[in-house]
Length: 132
Length: 122
Image 1 (cartoon, rainbow over the protein chains, first blue to last red):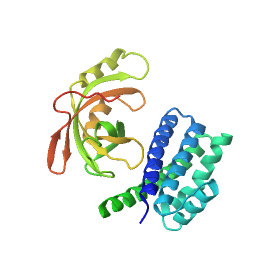
Image 2: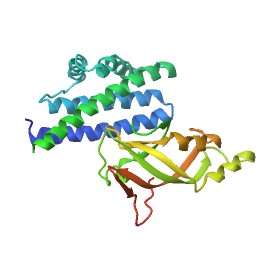
Image 3: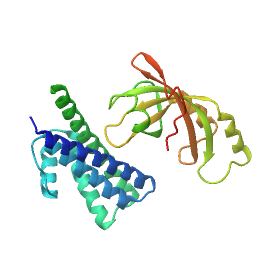
Image 4: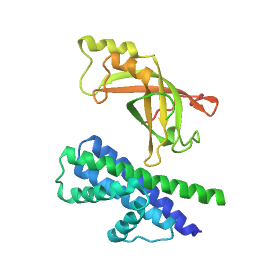
């Protein structure tokens, strides 16, 4: 059971993730890979934060987010394969070192991770709604 | 995914279709529509390309895939409709396709989309 406040905050973070994800697609369509990387990381961060809240956890910083993702990685293949990719994409935002081939390889893995996190949130929220 | 789809899709804002029609997330729906216009991304249609205008008014079938992340859903062009576009050389990235979505199959019901007036997504 989670508090109404935590649920509302989780929903707010999910909306933020939706916005970041749209921005990622926009910059990806323009082949601006560093900006796209920034928004991929933003999406992952917001989704992990929201999912953490739904599990009764607060994930206030990068370290906590990564720890949480690594725990999820032990349960879900999509997350296991995507964790390193999203860390590299996060670094790419700061250092812009990826060519299209490298970016594409990590982007595909990141997409799978993002979809898995969003699915987990969706099912979690559906369960809460049904319980009300 | 229901039906055969091509790899080609359009992005449809959720606020114009899946939200108002209460579509479930992570599902697929058959959608019908028609072509309103085909333009090149850059420049005008020239020479043989003008034949592309023959596509205006033709019916298309799509498969809508409702996404769990972002504010857009993917509207895949169904395989048999894709062959119509492909035969005219309307390839992704080179052309802008303007379509009107007319009907969607929700459960067993075929529902008219915005039956009272045209709603234009931007």
